[in-house]
Length: 60
Image (tube, rainbow, N blue to C red; front, side, top):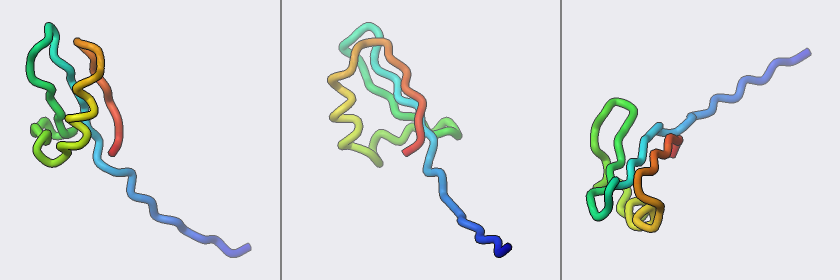
């Protein structure tokens, strides 16, 4: 049987924090703890409509 290896890059893990209480800054933080809002302005703009005090953990 022939074996095929497929390499996948998982993407960059990030945490998104919405302000609590609003109004306040929305924070987008890399897995290493760096603030990365400036690298993803579209995501920050879209997340401004999310509820206050929300934490999202995901891979981009």
